[in-house]
Length: 292
Image 1 (tube, helix red, strand yellow):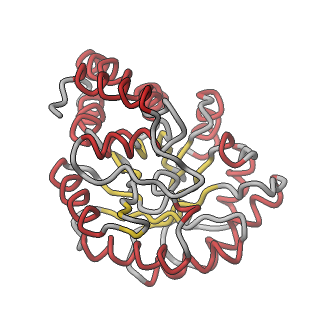
Image 2 (tube, helix red, strand yellow):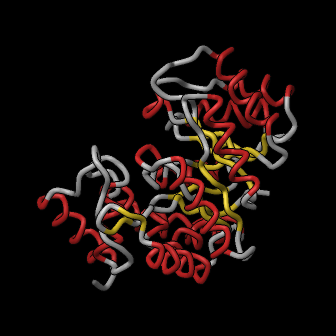
C-alpha cells in the first residue's frame, strides 16, 4: 500500500509564517514528477517548531492541495502519547491517507513503553500507521521483536520508515514482519541496499530537489534493470551526502532556495546553512547537472 517514493516535505517560511504559495508550488512539482506521496510535518518539515494550530492547518491545507492525486502521510508523532493522539485524530479528520509516528524522543521509554505508546495511538484512529524508527534523533531504538509484538496487538500498522542505518536490523524486521509490514528506507543513501534486502521504497529528503530522479531508481530496480539502477544511484550519492553537510533540514532548505522553490528561512534553534557549506552544496548541485 505504501511502496515507492514519498517525499518528506520541507515547510516553507516567510518572515516567520508558513508560505502557502510556496507549499502549492512544491506539491505541484512533486505530483508532476510522479512521486507516490508526500509526508508533511515530519522532521524535514521542522515539526518540532510549529504550533499545534499551525500543524493542524498545514496538514489540512496540504490534503486540500493534493486533492487525492497522491497519498498524504502526515507526521503526527510526539514524545507525549496524548499529544500524538490529538494530532493523529486531527489529521485523520482532515483526510490524510496515513500517519507517520516517530519514536518518542528525549524521554527514552523502554521497549514496553514504546509498544504501549504506538498501540494507544493506533487504537485511537482507523487509518494506517507508518512507524518511524530513528534512534539518532530520538535516543531510543524500536527493536524488531518489539515491532513484531506491536503488530500482534493492532491491525493498522502498515509500514515502517527505517532510519537506524543498520541493514542487519532492517533484515530482521523483514524476517519477522515482512508479511505484515512494508519497510521503507529513511535514508536516501541506503535506498539501493534497502531495495536489495526487500524494502519497497523510501521516504526521501533529497526528493524535495530531484523527485523524478529518485523515483527513477525505484522504477529501474522494480523493472530488474539493476545495472542502470546502480549507476543512477551512485551518481546521486554526492547529493545524498550534501543533504547532511549540516543537520537536516538545513541543507535541503538551502537547496530549495537555490532551485527557486522557497526561502531557506528556518525557525530557531535551526539556523541557515553556513556560507562555506552553501558553496559546497552549490558545487554538488551543479556537478550533478542541475541548472541554477
